[in-house]
Length: 162
Image (cartoon, rainbow, N blue to C red):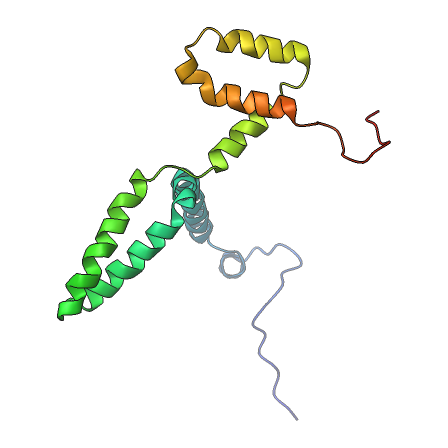
């Protein structure tokens, strides 16, 4: 004769009038609210960090080097090499926001200006740009002239656009 196995996960097939049994089977609502609050808080935190991630993406190399040197300098702060390593790390960390962005921003601008593909759209855009001084719109004009000189179609002979 063997012992009956312990039944840890009971399933209730019908609703019982016993309040004690019903309270043991159902989950308390507080844990759901708590988990939902944690999930929403994490999503809001991630959404607020996206602009910071875009700014760091352009300057990740000096930030990484500065972080490594600063941490190494803090770990070695008792010795004389700690200050020698800490100072360049702090300089890299503080100078990273002052560096210009990468050409990724320019490629995004080129993609946005590529929408103006027909001659009528180009004339409208150039009429808008004529209202501003050349010193302000020179980068946009350079991109537009480069896009106008590059062939838009495929480079295969005999292949035309429909």
